[in-house]
Each structure stands twice: as structure tokens, then as C-alpha cells.
Image (cartoon, rainbow, N blue to C red; front, side, top):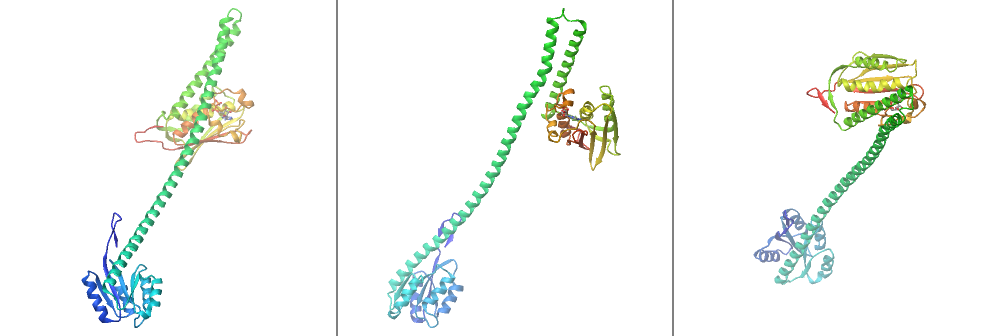
Length: 420
Ligand code: ADP
């Protein structure tokens, strides 16, 4: 029996093995069956019969064994047991004398298809053989189909297993994305609420003081007019700063910031920024020190200056008069690490991540006194990250802050420009 690629089962050749010590009988039967189209072989003893079945049988053919119950060496039931060990589906027809009825019945228990009694009718034998072949063909066919079914089952289980694992992974990714979207959505809502509040506050002052001037122009004196106008100017400047910072931040976050890279000297930038900031506050001593090799970097000078301005500006804003501000640079492998260490109020541990979020401000005693948009650190963070770096803050509350950012020494695309 052979299964084809389509899984169909085609019939095999049919062979008959006669195991009988009556040589005359075996020869006659063999001639008749060969004439009927079967491939016939014979064996005179049980052991020889088992050997022929084991080695001389065509594996491509179905084999029916005509088996004499009385053999010189083994009895027919024993032989049948051995044959079953070789091929569990073997079809056997037992040949018995009247005296062997008991053995014939037990051979049926051992799985023989039928038994014929000597002297037998040849047509009856042929009909038994035919039926035994049909039965065996069905058995083999069933076992092949069973095997095929088992294979399909294994494949199906494997596919189900794989698909289930795939679905689980996709589900997890989907859940993560949904979580991230939720967080982003919350951030966006908070951002919009904060932004409108930040823009609304100076606007309210400008509207209030300008209306007051218009309504009471003839009732307020020159000093008051000057004070009101100063407030209006300061608030307009704050509004302008906020909207400029907002625009910068959204440009960086949308990936629209263009980095124009060139070789720059970080120490020079830090000194220039310190010089510019001295105009705003000169009561804090600034000390700039860069380790050999850490001064030069390939980056965008304007953006780097903005990072220094925001960090050093904060350090000065929040530091008490007479304190020190140290700006240092060192090399770690291919990375430059810049640190801005002040002696101000420091950042509480639970706020060290939050202060980098847009509009987040610490409203402690110092925070109330110092003005700001709450965008400086988010802009610095966005720039540093767009340059492939990282930024963080350390230091203990009350003992100053240490803002550190690390940047790759070479930030260079093929044409020298990098868009973030
Ligand atoms: P702001 O315009 O309020 O300074 P930032 O984004 O620059 O906005 O800073 C966010 C908050 O982080 C500030 O409001 C301040 O509370 C805190 N902060 C930033 N830098 C320092 C510093 N060097 N020392 C103490 N607090 C700081």
C-alpha cells in the first residue's frame, strides 16, 4: 500500500506465503494461486516460514500467509505470533485437520483471518484469500489514513500553538501601545492646559493694566503710568519668551529641528554664556573648567549654546548671592560629559524627572520668587536627546543641583548636517 502526494491510497501487489510441510500439497496450491495472479512462495517449516516472511517478502506487497497448524518444528499458532511481531497486520489463514480444531480456534484469537480444514476445497481457499486481502487492504489503508491524520493533527497543533503565541505577543504590543497612547494623550491635555494658562497669565496683566491706563489716564500720576507701562512691557516680554519657547519645543518634538553641525569649543561656549548671563546676575561666581580633550565637539553651536544658557541661566536664577557655579567637562570614551553644579536649593528626589516635563515648576519659596516659563529644561532635554545624548540632575535638597548632560563627541552625518 502506498500513499500518493494527494494522500490517496493505491493498491499494492498481492503475495501468498504457504507454510506447510506437505510438499505435494504446497506445490499444487502454489501452482493454482500463481495462475490466479498471486506471487507465491513456500516454506516447509515454521522457522523457515518466519525467515521467508522476514527477509524474502516484497515490502511493497500485501502478504497473506497460508499456515499449517501442524508443522515439524513449531505449531502454527506460535508461528502466527512471531509473524505478528514482524507485521502486526499480517493476514493469516490456518490450515487444520479435524483433530486440530482447538488450535484453529485459538489461532483465530491470535488474529488469524480464517481457517480451512483438510482436505480443503480450492475455491473456498481462494475466496478466503481474497477476503483476507480485502480485509488487510482496509487495515493498511486505515492505518495510513490514521498516520496522515496524526501528522495533520501535529501540524495543526503546532500552527495553533504558533498562532496563539503570535497573538499573545501582538496583544501585548497592542496593550503597550494603548498604554503609551493614554499617557501621551494625558501629557497632551496637560500641555495644552498649561500652555494656555502660561499665555493667559501675562495677557491678563497686559489687558488689566492697559485698560486701567485708558480708563484712568487723567487720574493717575506720572510715576504710576511708568510703573504700569513697565509691567505691561515685562509681561509682553514674558509672553514673547513663552511663545518662542513653546514654538522651539514643538519644533524639536516634531522632529523639525535642523542641526547644523560644525566643530565647536564647549569651554568657549560656556564662557560666552557666563559672560552674557553676568549682565542679568553678577552676584554668583562662575568657574569653567574642561578636561583636556573634552573641549572640542562636533555639534550645532546655536543649539549647544541654548542648552548651556538654559542650564546655567537656571543655576544662576536659583542660586543665592555670593555662591559659586562650576561648569566642568570631561571625556568618557567617545562621550563628553558636561556638568553644571550650583549651590542653590537643589531638586527634591521625587521631582528630578518631572522638572524636565514642559511647564513643570517647583513652587517652593525660591520658585515663587523666581520667574520662569517652565520650558527651559524640556527644551534642553529635547535638544540633547535629538543630538543622541542624555541629560539628568543629581544633588541633594538644600545642597545645590548638579545638571549633567552627555553628548557623543562626533555628531556628524555624511554631509555634516543632521536633521533631528
Ligand atoms: P523655569 O522657567 O521655571 O526655570 P525650567 O524648565 O528651566 O523652567 O525649570 C523647571 C523647574 O526646575 C524650575 O521651575 C525650578 O523649580 C527647577 N529648577 C531648574 N533648575 C534648577 C536649579 N539649578 N536649581 C533649583 N531648581 C531648579
